[in-house]
Image (tube, rainbow, N blue to C red):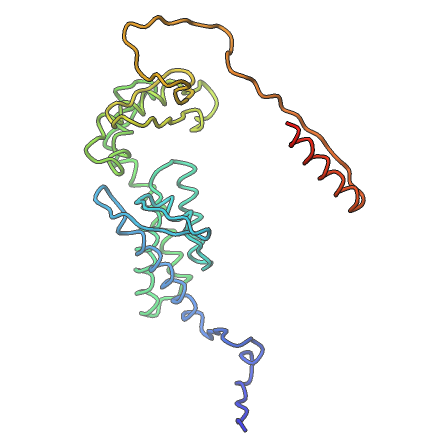
Length: 279
């Protein structure tokens, strides 16, 4: 007969089996910092133009091979609350600027790593947070004096290329000159006068059979379709232009059937099967 091992008295006996309980504030804070450091370390090697690709398999077993931190973060199923705060900051950076998602996580991980050393020396987390807030005010004071170049006219293509080129270099190093010109031309063409810039107004259409340097910007709409016939190439052919659609339009129909009993369901299924056989 096995002996009964009693639980420890106090708050620990109220928790279920396997639950972790930290008594000190510093111990819980250090646990959170460790989790954030591990999360920052996982995306740090994917930073920069020489960053390595990551293989991510999400919850529906879909595989991604990418070095984009925004994609890695979006597909990871992170449950730790402190790491989720870092993800929220990265997503805010992505929605506001569209770049620098990986830098936000790396910077937060580095700041927490320095904070861990201060906490182990005896500094309270409140004092550390107050020190970082003062450092933020000082950074906002110094940063305007460190501007190396400022784009005055966003509609000037030669000036806008200099700002877009740096972001493209992080993903397509070596092809930044060609891609920066295409991206700048596409963005300036749909840049509104008053309202905010909408990324969805620029669409990317991938066509098989070409390379990167065959890309071009098309003003208007592109409908990618396969060849309808067997002939794929013709020399000195005559071309006819039609101002109306020549496709067979499919009518959109919507029907609602109210079934109350099982017998009605069987009769409806039988009648539908008979109608398909007649066709």
